[in-house]
Length: 425
Image 1 (tube, rainbow, N blue to C red):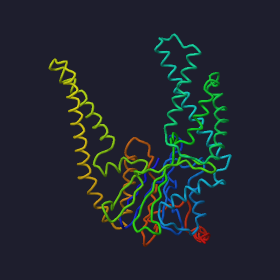
Image 2: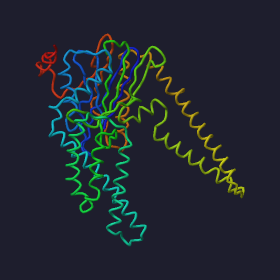
Image 3: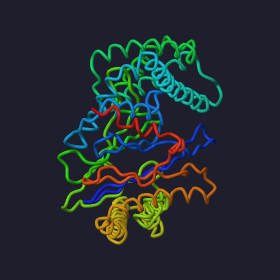
Image 4: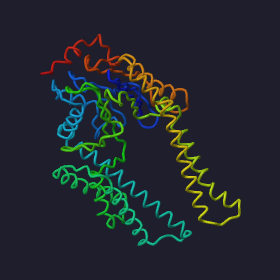
């Protein structure tokens, strides 16, 4: 897990990321690299959260290979850097070769088929309980499995089509068919011939659709293009990549740009966002959800309780009361949201709008530290912690590191710094 923050105003953008990485469910290391310069010459940075690999290839390798290939090239807009980064991933046959591709697809197909098997098994157990332990005939089990597979295929097809190239689809379909047969025979046993076609379709469709069932990766690209005077941030979610295609989608809520107009400041949190949301809104998101859920429960029972207390059986009156209660609950929720925005969010954003670059960096670091501190003093695993990397990007100064950890002593490695700019054309 991780905690990362991006703060933007018209003067620049500050990015901060912790160093914690969780291996398995218990082991935590505090030396992960999550924040990088995307270019050696352009004012653009990139952060990673979520899964530390893309189709089993470490993100650090992908990013630094892209930076090496980018050399001194610059783009007009940050959006162009993001598009070029996606293009690089999709065309990197040496990073995502056929062996890596098959290993990643094996994990994907196995997780999809295993989920279907568990759902079908659960449905069979429910039917057995309904039949009061009489058991199910083989034909009944087959029909239940077939029904679940068809339902899962329909659910997968309901997602947006990522539209991979036709040659990639043909190649991946062939691999998915082979893997679905290999995994399906072991998992489904004698039922496999009945559901074989559906399992293959599920594996194929899951690749081309925008459903990301496994641990996906978040990519944050922020800074300035050559033709931009104000910073922007683009957030992408990656699920995996194969030769010729990368599975990703844009996160529209975390893709923003600031301007001299109304949207002149922004604070965006990634991964573990609860403490940043608490700081911004004055209430923990879990507490807010608890209050709204209980408020709904109270207003939902009022019509029945009121009518019952009067001894009335008028359904029209009950429906009218339900409508009034729903409107009242909605009004209370809207009023609370408006209050949080006006009394908590706006004062912070108004202050961020006027912050100089050094204070942007200090604020970004403090918000990540706040999340780390909360994890440290509670019973939860310290999934946020370690040194915090902080950088500030401005139009005039470019990317400036405020805090930056190294896994090696800088004074003992002068060649590292000498070679940094060597490949720039």
